Image 1 (cartoon, rainbow over the protein chains, first blue to last red):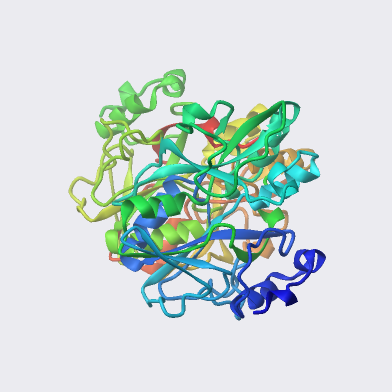
Image 2 (image 1 turned 90 degrees about the vertical axis):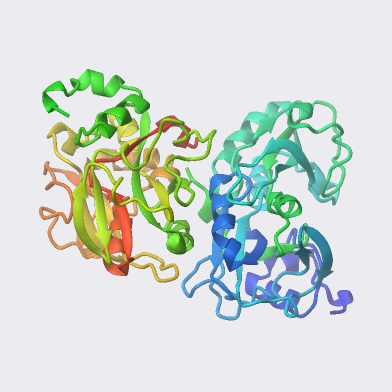
Length: 275
Length: 275
């Protein structure tokens, strides 16, 4: 698709999820931040049926980095009819994400705009919550999202904290970091705590060294952070954790989204809020 | 065990979970309400490994009736080391529950004090949250727990609402009902909403007929409710739902706890609260 026909910022924000997915299915390869405002975006990982129980158990045991929004049964390209998350009868998870990653035996072998050529009828697809969902209510509460203001991707880091393993699946916790003014840290905790289905409260506030992070300016994923005097680094569990698990656990095949290129779901962000 | 040696009410409330489980393992068969105050109690269901993915998916898709607290891998009799829920090295899920039910092809065939003779190395055990956890904070907030005051079990009902199926597993939603004074319904909603990991907010407030319940005085499980003028029936998703699923889905074998005879976990109730 010709990117000269890319919808403008307002049109992207106002676009219904099914229409945005149709553009990505047609070949548009762009990050999804700012698209379909108010709808939850999801991390994606698909693994063979024989690993599906271990993957779901890994997610269940590590709900902060891997909050499961929906699971597509083996070979299915959409969620069951009636799913509020991704039950659209026109959905096709093989094409609806702007860019995918193909992993073989833990190696990233390819980034592709669709996975029609890699699809297998034994693949089980997991949709995992994304912190984009709670960035909006933080912004509404007046907490600056420094990376958004600078037009950057959020900074993400591999940590020395281990996830709870499940069967053969194991790996480190990956976190996203947002610098928050000291006077607003409590608000950031309070607001994100209300979204347990999309990473929830921070896992760590302050000293990065305790997470085994030696240099905040050199993130493992995403862009370097914006530094403002008086900000405190606040760390949330991150949906890139399954990709770090794939790197270490080396399943025969796994398919994920490419960072920042999420699946836009049909579920409103607000449904994931608790009082 | 001789029930003349049953610890008194205060001793039961103060007893550490591991010690309570040791008494049940020694053969004591009593309901667990009031034991080990402040610790979460869990519903239990074990199914063969080949059904484990579908069971975990059923729970994931129906998180209000089936909030997963922990999963024990195939053949394991306790959670992995380090589990805050049930990682006690002395734990043994085959004996730690006061009374179990054995189900074959969807028929309840036996109630037993331990399942040593029924155990199989391919059984995967799921621990599912229980509404006992949020009864305490409701009581603290001054909401009367009518059934507790009357020394009864809570009233539970099969509904006409269907759970989201997973693979071959399907069944109706089961709810527990508590009558709440009209002036305290909002508090009951607000407080239980803070516990999404243990059934969370009510699924229904008021008219039982809309859930397909024709007579509140004849519950499908537990005891008949206590009726007070001006109370409103409030319904929460219930951890007996997996047993209703077993009845309908007819797996070759399933093991569950007997109603009211829960697994007392090592996790404090407070860890399941969100702000």
